[in-house]
Length: 191
Image 1 (cartoon, rainbow, N blue to C red):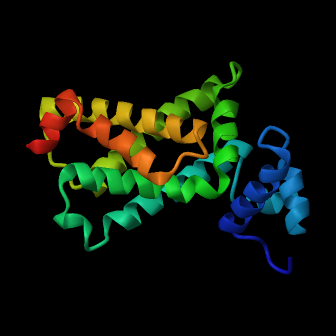
Image 2: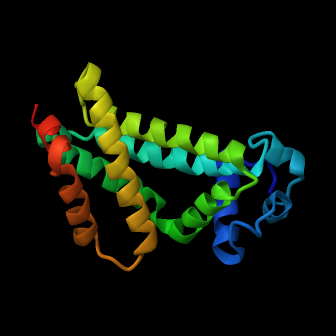
């Protein structure tokens, strides 16, 4: 590589390599070798391996936000907007689904408490962007309840998506719709 790689090139290389060897076996020196650079070029963008995970989920959040700007979204019901946005988020991760699951298992290892705390913050951040992109305007107690219920729907859908890679898009959407139409969340989405 003639120039220093961009953060995106480093992330793409790491994902490509992890598809073959798995996230646990991936080392930053492998990424540097793949790109023909020294570790200093990697460190310029990523201070540690977990920063690649954060960049991967940032990329998914960006896909959700881009979908949120689409002209067709405003005319949809709140439930359908939320569905479209989360599906866009998941589709952006789809090319590396197995590695995405491996990244989460890496974060959940007992010795990685610091990564688990960051994982909780990541979930919160993604749910916040999901609500914002869906143009949710609930306030006070309604907002707090909605955030909690959306976090549950997000986690259930994401875990299901990770565990059922062969499931077709219609079935995943049906699962998400059931969650969005369930109990108190359905009432909040009608407001």
